[in-house]
Length: 64
Image (cartoon, rainbow, N blue to C red):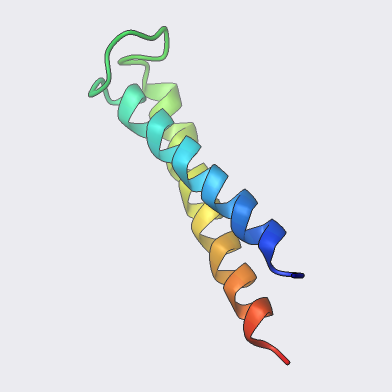
């Protein structure tokens, strides 16, 4: 059970980062974040951090 927290946080960061990126690029309407390039610049690194966190969480679950 020691790897579930990084997996959960990594998945959350990846999803939020992806949403911020597509909103910042203008693909999702209906938000103040729509078509604001700063959200695309903040979302991409957040999504990458989420991927790294998921990868580290999966590695920690495999160790005996």
